[in-house]
Each structure stands twice: as C-alpha cells, then as structure tokens.
Image 1 (spheres, one colour):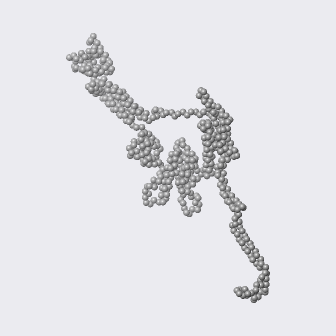
Image 2 (cartoon, helix red, strand yellow):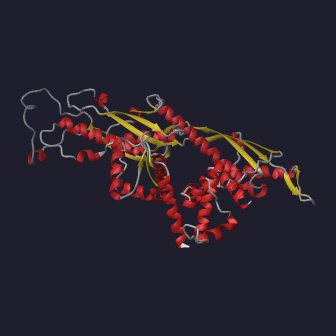
Length: 543
C-alpha cells in the first residue's frame, strides 16, 4: 500500500513536471494559498473573543491602561474610532481588578496628587494657592462623578482673596459652579442635586449652598439662585406630607390585606397639614402665694414746747453742760412727747414666665378613600365567581380603617369605603430564555466547528481534486503513445496477455495496470478523437 501511495505521488510530481510553466506556477500558488488559508482558519479558531474593558477614556488614561496591560501580559485591542479598550472575555474582571490596584483609570480630573509633585524653588504664593484650588476642584469632581447617574463632573470654585482692609465682607464669600455629564437616559432628581450642592458647600469654607450653581451637559439649570430657602422649605413640606400619606395608606392596607387579600384593597389618603410656626411667651402671677421681698421701718420721737427758749445772747451761746453739772441741774424741758413709726414692706407675688413653641406639621384634616374588591368564590366547576360584599362587611371594613388611621370627626376627617369589581391585571409573562446564539460558549464551539469544516473542505474540495488531476494527466506509456499515433491500443480484456507476451516492451504488474488504465481514461477525457481512432484500429485488427 505504501508503494501504491509512493507511485501515485510520483505520478503527481511527473504530471506537474509535464505541465506548462505558467500552469505550474498557478498550481504552486494555489497550493500555497490553500495552506495559508488553512493556517488562517486554525489561528482564527484559536483566537479568543474580546470584550469591552473601558470606553470613553481620555488619551492619558488610554495610554496608561495599555501600558499597564502590556506590563501585566494581558492581550488587548484598541479601537481607533471610539478609543475602546478590549481584552479577552475570560480576563475582563482580572484586568479591571489589576488596573484598579494601580489606580487606573484616573479620569480627567486631577486631585491632591498634583501637590505631590516637586514645586521647585521660587514658586510664588499665588501659584501655590492656584494649585491647591485646582486640586480641590479635581477631588470634588471625582467625588461627584461617583454618584449614580453621573458620568463625569467639573467643578469651578471662585474663592475671593480675603483682606483685612475690606469693610463689606459679605461680598467676599466664595461661590461654585458644577457641570454634570449625566448618563444617557438618566435624570437626576431633586434629592441628588441637593446632595451635590451640600457636598460642595461642606467642602469649601464659608461657602453657602445658595452660592452654588449646578447645570447638566444640555445647559439645563438644576440648582441655582432661584432655589431660595423658601422654595426648599416648600419642597421639604411636600415630602413630609407625601410620607405622612404613605404612612396612613400602609396602615390601612396592612390591617385589611389579611381579610381581603393582597390584591383586594386599594386606599388613598389626602392629608391637610398645618405647617404654621407658632411661638408664645406668657407671664402669670399667683396672688395666693405672696412673699416679703423687702421691709423698711422708721420711727420718730419728739417732745412738746418748754422754757428752753429765750432771747439769744451770751447765755445761749454757751456750750451745753455735761457730766455732774448736768445731772445736778434741774430739768426744765419737761413737756408732752410725740412718737411716729413708719413701716414699708414690699411683697413679691408668685410669677411664672413660660415660652412655648407649638409643633409644626400637625394634621388638620384627613380625607380617606378605600376601594375593596368583590368576594371571589370558586364554584363546582372550579371557576371563580364574583359576588358583591354585604353591608355588614363594608361597615366592619370602615371601622377597621377608622381605627387604623386614628379617625377624628371633630377635626373634619372623612372616610369613604366602596365595593367594586377589580379588573384582573394581565399575567406577567416569564422572561424569555436567552437564545442559544446569545450564549458565549456557543460562539467558541462554533468557531472550532467552522474551522474543522473549513479544513475538510480545503482538503477534500481543493487539494484532493488537484492532485487527482495531476495524476490523471501524467504521460502515458510508450506503447500507448505509439498505438495512439496510428497503431493498436490493447483492449482491457486482452491487456494481461499482451503485457506478458515477449513483444511487450516492459512487464507491468497489476498496480501498473491500474495506473495505466487511469491514464488511458484521462486521455479519453482530454482527447476523445484519438481514443476513437485507437478503438477503430482495435476493431479492424480483431475483426
């Protein structure tokens, strides 16, 4: 068998050598292209599928990420149009973890790492302040960019220079502007915008939330000067009212759901809330509990008129007599006496001073609406039959709802409970299973199968017919060529005898016979006229 293959390959080489030069070149180019195509198919089947790692990066981040991937030995591809970095699908998470460990991607904002660079000598204080402000803006932009729904952010701070010689210091407060790049299809709510405003205000000294302006990429003003304190207060009041109504609704549904079922009750509450702020100061006295605060007593004692008077002269100008002389001298001033006593008392009454601040957010009135579904009962056939609820059931449901919300008729609360037949909600269809082609392993297996089919088609569809043609177009034996020119071509049934006769130029075995038979058949295909002439000679000779 090996000899047969060797002879066939030799015949193919002999047939190729007998072809014209240009045809030989074409055959060689075809063989080379076939081999190259097979190699490409094999490489394509072995090539992993790539998945997006990061997109929308800046040039600095793209360069840093590609260098880091090269250093870590992770293959990657870079899209020239979008700048998307792609890595093999099975190494996406590994690449992201390793890049995160290296602090990549950094983003367009530059934070406090800007201050880590050596400033050198001779840097002015103005440059130092400018770099610090730039670093602070970058850190704020990074923090805001991490909020859900925000893709990137830019922060501009206007911090005036403080001076001791400025009188109007109120005009020297800083201000800020925030530019947000919101993700496509997303919209920030008022709570997120308020969080961004207070985040920036808390990061800069003396920065008021009223001095912060927030806009998005479309130029829409999200927060600015029109967001006054009164507007914010109104928004907070609305949120409080909504939370209070949801609280009452939940209480009603929680108490009625076990009776009516999860889908058997619907409730709505409208609350009228008083947000008035009242402060009262009261001063009261209690006369039943007096207390002496101070007391003052004065007493005057005086005598009536006597003989102590006289004409002024030398005697009256003499000093008074004291000692024994005064005791021995008779008292000539005896007369009537007058006594006066005055007492002043100040009483302190019991005084109470009270300062009362009444709570805000009191409920003035509640309007409650409750709808209950019909009673559902299965009949003998298993079908659901709906029957209206009785008046007694409605009354019991009304009583439960009143107790759940703290119904107060004195403040004007109203409650309305009705029975109605609910419309059945359509059943939610289950999510469709992912298609077979959407699964990643299918593409990997498909690539291998396509590569194998391509190799088989290349072998059996291109290479095998090519070598077969070369074998069939090999040169015929000398005796066949001679008989083709005008002699006799041995018939198939007589070939064995003629090949073994002494007149045969060379002895051929059975393998050579099959090979020559194939060459004769190929010659019959290529030149039927000559074959017809040979057959005519056979018929004439065997006649």
